[in-house]
Length: 445
Ligand code: URA
Image (cartoon, rainbow, N blue to C red; front, side, top):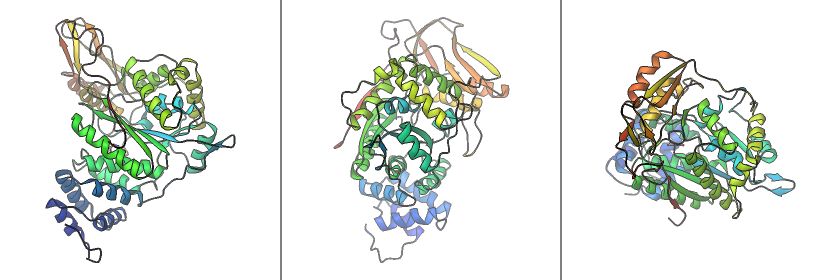
């Protein structure tokens, strides 16, 4: 069904169109998104439309139209004039669809910038079981997430790396819609996820974009086919908007690294920047760095060299200091700790990312509604991952919290989080049940 632009559009007819499984016209989409952003379409009407989209889906034309309506709700940034030493700077950004222990932005941004590329990383805060990059970085004493546009551009030219909050005028429709989706059970929809992520990235003005699309229990879309569909939708949206966009599909069935929370994830990221850190965090950081450098035209660059020789660490220190942070200050530590131990001998065969993310959230690391404070000190550290041998009584997790009353809830999340099976060659030696990097998606997808 198409709508004549001269027809009078009203919210109930738009909702009914999608409820009936029909296509929305561009004019209907633009009218609803604009009306909701300006407060003229009521939240209950937009909620009904979101649920209809969740249940009925949208085709690629509708998704592109919805994305552009969200971009048009605010300002588009222009990064094309960035220069260093009189030469234009290539810009490349990365976005993850969110996961447990996903601190990759922290080492990746300075690592890529240390090659002379500008990395404008406009990041978000955590909601639910997935952590937020800004919440993690705020555990560094003095560090500020709010940066004005002129300071951001200046930092990109001087340091090359910025991780900061998106300004209120960047895709404001998404900000309102995301908050509504979160309380109406409509987050996990491919059209709504793809348009939310890509509206912000296109409005930000990056020249190239690498998407880390997660699949597995800790991801918004646990099913791999859904992750592939999300990846190809976003790659196409980016390509159509003139942004060189590629996606990597990665496993989020197991938490990334050994630290889940805020300050504990910053500490683990600094280990990676110092040339150490858990193997999976290093592997994903390097894989995404290679994609980003390739997209920026540096096809032969080897990011591992800048982790080994300290250049990535130098850029990290400069990036943190430029936003008021003290890279040498001790990170906050929790007042209370507790340990979860293995109940029997064997090999860890599985660790449920979602359960570990929920435990960190319950310890105070995340928020249940926008605007709530999070505890920098809260989190979970993991002592045995899939493939590790454990004995009864050996620690599996350490819980960190400022509030002792939060410990029982976190322990109950972790009760079934780890499967310990009989000792067997199949599971021994740190092997993941599936590879961390599952596939790459490029245009045409
Ligand atoms: N991140 C976003 O920016 N939007 C979503 O909808 C989910 C994760």
